[in-house]
Amino acid sequence: MKKLFAILAAAVIFMTAAIPAFADMDSPMFTAYEAYVVKEGGTPLYRFDWDYETDITTVEETDTVIPKGEKVTVTGEYLCNGAYYGNVDYNDKYGYVLLTDVSNEQPKYGSENAHKLEEPETVVVINPDGVYLRSGPSMTYDVVSKKIEFGTVLTYELVNDEYFHSWAYITYNGESGWLYTVQYGFDNVYNCASLVSETKGDDYYATGKVMTIDDGLQLTETPDETSKKISDKIPAGTALTYEWFFEFAKSVAVYTEYNGVKGWLIAAEDWDTTAAIETDREAIVISSEEKTYLYDSPNGKKTDNYVLNGDILQYSYIATKPDYEAEDDFSFTDWYMVTANGKTGWISSADDGVLISYIDVHPEGTAYLFEEMPVYSEAGKITDKPVFYVPADAEVLCIKSFEIYDYDNDTDEVMKNEGWYYIDFNGKTGWICDDRLIDSYADSRLSADIFDRDEIKYVTWANIHESYSRASGIVGQISEDTAVRKIYSYSVGMEDGNSDDGFGYEYIEYNGIKGWVDKNSIHYEGGYARILEEREEYSALSEEEFDVKFREQINKLNEELTEPETTEPESTETHKPEESTASPKTLIIGCVAGGAVLALTAFVVILLINKKKKSA
Image (cartoon, rainbow, N blue to C red):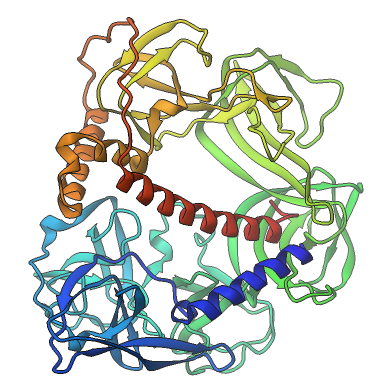
């Protein structure tokens, strides 16, 4: 991990140096708009510079001036030193313009332009100065409401973007408009936070309790650790309650009260937990030793209390602390406060041979077994004497599951990667092990696959097979644009680097027919959008027109999933769909976007895997 973190650190330094504008913020999704420069003599293109040590952001003019009357596209808005800026790309030069220097004559943007959430979201206003609703999702739109005070709870279901929305369309006290719900920018101004009561089953924040780990913490005026300290110092081990919490990319703050003073407690910053959030989870201890001894505190001393290998524990707090004995500054250890054998203490994920794994509960889950599976009486222990067997191609009730993941940082090899499921098969219960021997250059064959009701995909043409093989019989055919729910997924095993079939399959239901469809025929929304771009009726549309038509098509297909099935099954006669060639524009956009997403995903996944190497 040390070598890997050094590489990642170098990458971060390079990215920060190359693009200082991004050093202190995460850019939320934004509804871009076009504007014209209205300032006499043109507007300068600015850049932001952030000082890591002082946490101060400065604004500097560049040599680029955008002439008056020039059209620019604003792709984001930020508050810096009391002024609003919009980021633009002008003549291949990226920077920021003052929003007062450009026009704000934008088209009407009402609720008819919004995306509707599947479930309403509820937030609480935490801006000390209150917030205002605007006539559109931008700071350049007019204010259309009276001030909404600090502490007001707001509920909404309309947003500016389907996935990563930052603006919400809200009606409050008879006034409707758009509210910016996230961080403004560099000035540490925050509008809204989440409520414990609205976590919808998210057990990490469900209890609303927190306990200080570091001594001498103080409450702050805002969720930012650099804001004014407003309370007495809090001793380590103090238990507090909270109703609101605010999550950053690298930290979390909770709104609590200490000695009559209300403010924000920074619970974690950069993976260093100073106050642990109480949770309500189960975990299992897998160890090379029969006994795992508990500590009196994170980074503390071992006690005489212990848990046994294979014990399923109820743990209340989880904390991440730097490993001060490591040779570098990028090593962290996860700590779990557990109760076992009537004793309470902390378990360290850094102890040799100790693996801590979360247990996920699946109250309505099912699993599909692709091969005969032995069932064991104890979790995490493969013995020679299974209590019974479940036959291949069987469905079982999946009650709960966990994974054992062990990674050798010195050799960059996966030592163990096992998925364990507690199942019920015809009234018999026990643990099965999906023993995934991972080859980093090949797909692994999953012996079990958890059912996911909420994963909607799209099919334009496909044969439906009775089994997960091209050689199996065809029981139906999809010959038009169709939305389906993925029920199970099968990844083909690899032998000597060669696939035994060449395809993966997904189990779906269509017009009353259940069967397996080649993964190459089934798409997420992004893949389905690229298919539509190649069709004549869509290819001539502008980007804005395409987005509207695409959303209408997606909504239409999704609505069909909830309607009763009345259509007769399609003919089982097969035919090969016409091949289409992507346009150069589509290929370029797809390659660039795909490459960026893959690079970012790989960076984040590698970082998280190494951080959680012993606690996954």
